[in-house]
Length: 461
Image 1 (tube, helix red, strand yellow):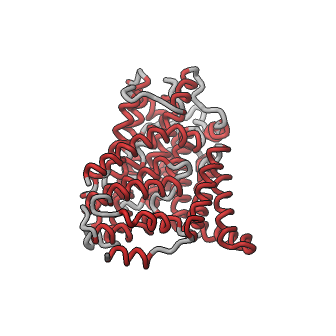
Image 2 (cartoon, one colour):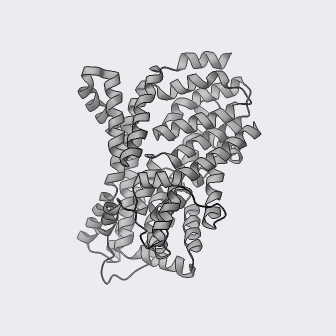
Image 3 (spheres, helix red, strand yellow):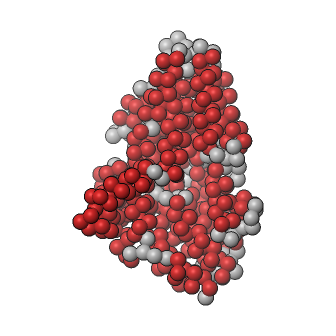
């Protein structure tokens, strides 16, 4: 079979031992409830497995290589810029002015959750924009109605990657559209159209987004750690124990006393950020830099803040992103080690004999979803895996839009559910809980959505 030949010549791995670092990370993260130590431990074990006595030098090389990674540099600049922008919104009082206006009609817990959900849907162009902005905006109103920070994080994370995936005017569509052309699943210039053809089959994103109103309305009952978190919040303790340092970091940014609040200083930059993202062909970094620069200019021109206060706020805003960025850095080091061990290739080789036109969508979602969940790499691993998936899809004459849907569903599940994925970490930080607290309370509902999706792919195939 042509696909088998392609697979055999493409995959390279170290066998079953490639699973060890990732399994170690998951065990340690759940045990100590902190991700960065777990990620570093997994990366160190992987380096020792690969390099033996030369591990110290190899670890230093990986650290430098990780810092030079274009994707990581993009994340640092985007998240830092967004942190600075949010800092200006808070310091100028514009964020509170906007939320006071938006939530004036919110009188119930359900209303607060749905306002959060709708705001997340509206910010569809990028999941980072969604995760960072909505959390900062909605903390105060959800605290008022005794919603746990974990529940707030779940609602936001369920409309971050999932909504960015199913609305094709987003950074996800550009990224995956380009890859679909590169691997032969779309003709040159038609990558986004091929991506759009898969949207009806992106079962996990659709289910994840639609589950939120059902949970908010009580149609799907709470269970597991989320039920405990909401019971705690009902007593007035919305911030979970162990997340006080995140709350303290948020308190470092305070509204300036006596400032004249201008709702336009929030609305216009946010609308501009969306417009600039589209203008720059969905390049979110350029849009973030341009929006931050224009906001600084507006704040100074209107004399809302003086020069020193403005740039102190920009720096303080960037500093709020240091902890999540450190976790993401450690996750990228683990990704580098997993790449050298060939984790993705090993698992694909194990499952390849079972892949047919009928089983391919089911297996792609199940296997790639597990890899994305375990590694926290919702984009990077698909650069490795998608050429192989494309070969198999073409060789077995599988339904290409269905395969695209299954692939994007798997990627979304990884972004949504992984304990140390960038979206998980950033959402938790913006909401005021740790990434492990967010991940463990969200995971049962993410798994429920994944199981429904698996059944759906089995039926559609």
